[in-house]
Image 1 (tube, rainbow, N blue to C red):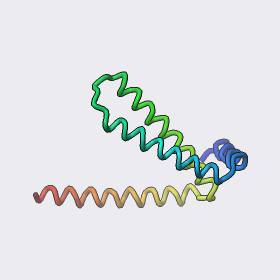
Image 2: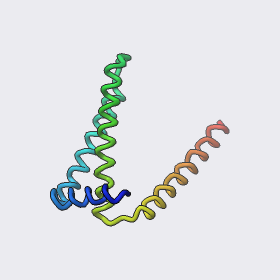
Image 3: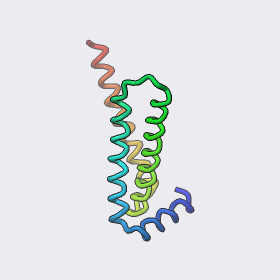
Length: 107
């Protein structure tokens, strides 16, 4: 994480309190869920409507990402530890995909 960004997050946490930033993360994750659900139930082929819904998803992903990164700063999680767990999860997902593909191939 860039020093500037980390310092900005530290200021946000100090100014608005850790508890408030955690509540904001919960709120933003809920807003992302809502935006994705609205896109999923969309019946329109209208590209303007689709673009609008997609823009909302992009906005909410950015909000969630910012707040997740603040949690990394708040809980003093090292980037290396987070990356290690991230890649562990990717390997686990790869294993699950491969197992499912094998099962489907046998069917």
